[in-house]
Image 1 (cartoon, each protein chain N blue to C red):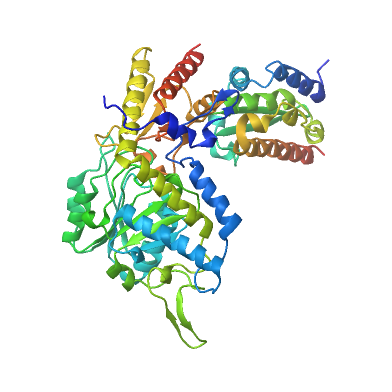
Image 2 (tube, one colour):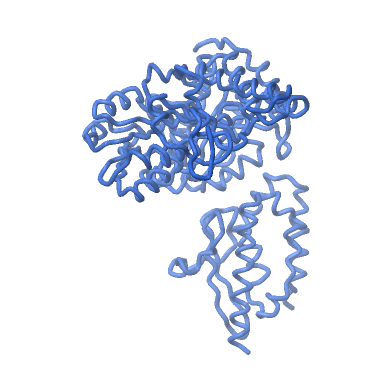
Length: 143
Length: 416
């Protein structure tokens, strides 16, 4: 059975808690997570798919297969790529409704703003908003 | 190596902010080109002003106002001596270098620039010495010209000489580059500009805390400096201008203080410097700024400069040794001019500058990463940004060692 978005978030929180607030290990861990993102085809990294408001470059390229939203994503910085991975692990191959209804409680729980600073937090918020907009679009198309 | 004439430990004790842990590690603050930390005397001056002397300056007939006015004007006299201006009236208080430059662009520029006139800046300008000129040049249909630089980050002075002509009305040039550290040959720049009758504005943001300033000897027409890069509070800067130049300039903003007499049909303007100081100024911070200047004078600019340049050489040596110890030499220094203030930009191949900045922060080390508000300069070097370390009088060699060790462990992690 596919774990729910809540299950995945709980797992993320548990994994981050192991570092007990140690910033350095947390960043190293994030950067390692980023490496798990499937390679995003270069031709999808265009201006149209750049998430606006991110300090680093972030691309999110959505798709829609069998009623589920797929997500290709990448960033030019490793720490942000780790954050992108977290979002990808929660939302890739979810229905538009699942994405729209997800409350991303893991962000506060892992202390993300302390970890990445407020400017990157804003960028992360843009990324979330963009994914929800894509989900909304696919939902409208599907209905 | 020069023995320092100053006791760094006792200087560090004067900066309360330095004595804290960040992310569980002792703070190492090397983002001094962005802003320096403030000594206790400056912090005390602010607290004392609001605790005992706060009143609006000039005009009022009561004791507190007289006191605050005297303290405010005392800072003006101190800055006059600090830059060796002929008169205190030639020193106008602003919000900082950015406002000082905008003031000149919007008053001198508006009055004296005409279609076809030329303004010269350099490739290494901060955006605050680019955009105000673009704005006024566009309005006046004047032309903005840019002095190119070599790969070390030094101005091509021959190109500059070729650019000068009777059309040149102003040369606005950074004294020391915030991104590269290059100290520009400003005396030569000024002399050459004057041969064609052009005025010269120096952006002294990075110069104030370590270079000897003598506006009369340099013969610059304008100099802009910021208090907060000079151990003083934010929100205070100075525009120095020669009296004869300032007097010909129209006022900047309209309001209180800048007038002589106001009627609904006609308003006459106050004398300099007040003509350019409309509205209640940032009194408390101006007053505290004096204490920052006193701090610099007490420690001695030459001592500060010697200590910082020793730290810079030691850091560069450490970086190069680290680079040579790793295959493919991932570190590239950006800004290798002969004459430099204590700023070193660099990039690390394979590590984005944002990531490097975050990883250093996790070790308690505060550096700046990004384009440093010098995007055209970054474009010149084909870079998106750099990691920038900038030292101040309170930094130590031990801190430099810790920074180099931190970079080594970051490189090790990235090559895993």
